[in-house]
Amino acid sequence: MKITIYLLSFLLALSCVFTWHLDDIADDPGVGWHLKTGEYVAEHGTAPVTDPFLARELPLPWVSDQWLGDYFLFRIFQLFSWSGLYTFCVLLFFLPYYGVLQVTAYRFLRGSFAQHAVPSRLILASLSTAMASYFCSKLGLVHLIIRPVLFGYAFFAIEFAILFRFYILLTRRDDQTAALQYLRKNLFWLPLLFVLWANVHPSFVVGLFLLALLTAAVVVDKFLLKFRYSSRISNVLVILGALCTAVTLINPYGLLLHESIFSLARSDYFMSLNSEWKSLGFRHLEGTLFEILFGTIVVAIFIVRREKLPWRTFEFALFFCFAHFSLQSVRMLPYFALSVLPLFAESMHVLLQVILRHSPLDDQEEKVVLSYKRSTRTTFVLVCCILFFLSLSNNAVGWYAGPYGPRKTKFPYDALAFLNEQAGEKRVYATPNWGGFLTFYGKNGTRALIDDRNTMLGEEVYKDYFEVEKLSPRSEKILTSLRATHLLLYKESALARKYRQDKEIAFEGDTSVVIKLIRDAL
Image (cartoon, rainbow, N blue to C red; front, side, top):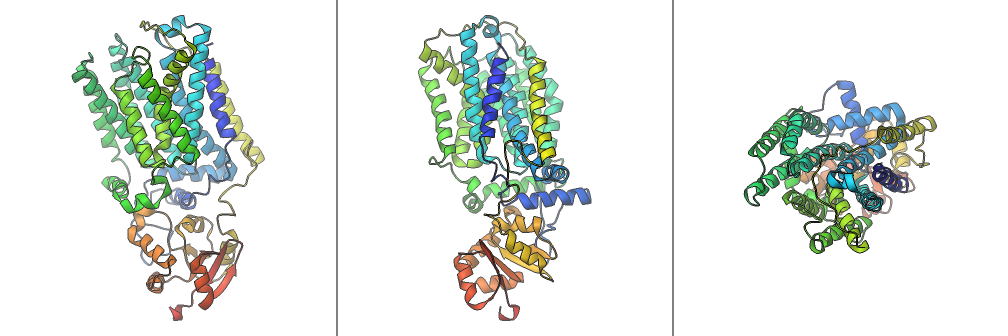
């Protein structure tokens, strides 16, 4: 009966991936330059310090804050093509939820519940955990894209599982010694995780925040709420936090990495420009799912007695902090989904008990080791391997027939093919959304002048782009300063209509138009 909670949750959560359309996960504007960065690292054996891709007179200084993640994605793509990369990214997305699911089940299956649980309560625990894993993974799908951010979610889940397991041990009345031993064992592993994380994706900052949040919660519990925590607990947490922060300096850029990350976060312009940094909208599916998770937990907090939901400072801080971050930025939704999965499962469990009038669980504390059969782990690993190798043998993801790569309905394949056939240097001025596409597929001297690397290019470059797009009087001056040779425009854009009148139309495709700029006329 114990493994029911895993199997049911695994199948339900996996079903949300099966029913998800994968046709747009390569449509992110940065997919192309991420893969090209990985190729650069593979060829040169080091992270780039200047931009090697854009058609600029002088290479721009660049802090490639995802260089190692780019390298991993490129190697997968190089070995297994798009289908292998799709499968890898889907599994990389799903594994973090499976990891958090394990600590959720551990919290359910500890103490007297594991010893005296009757079948009806096991079914309730399995059902609530399965529902939680389904809703949370469905919410996280809002940011399923082919980018190194997927590694960030995986590392966050690993850290969360370690810290939450420690917290479960800590909140047992007689188990602080075990909690301290567990934490000391991870004094090596967590800093090692952050060394890797800092070179893979900037989301290590979220991981540092989680560690700081737990430390602050333990201090509040000890000194304000008078829980009898050993002082050694908070001391070890502080040391661990300092170590994890310090090791993030082990990267090719040193402090420049941190300056780059926080310069982007401080930019109100970029926060309002990019949809992933905008506030959560409630008219979309992710908004509805957020309301379900948030509402369920809040209702459980207010209508259920504390004996049934004995949360302390950490649980409340975890819930409200990550809910706040998600309301501020859609990009934080996967972190919210991962961090509240155990809380949502527990809330569902106690609400189902109230609805079905089950008696409250006993709270006797007994030593119980979670019995998670190896056969279940083996089955899970085999399922993942089968999905991956099916994609290699058939050149297709098992449940997805394609298309693969950036979609032809959103990216100008025909126009780029025309540009690649032309002789000489082609300095192409196009929307930043197509910059990575041009970088990845451009050949024979075809290079973009702008892409979506916000921190590297700076606010003025994007403001100039919108000046050109709006047919500002400065448009000609901006294009001249960049020595643009071609414009690649949306076919029905106002800019395309304007340049049709007095410039040579070099190519017109289904969705885009190429306009050759006459340098003497500029």
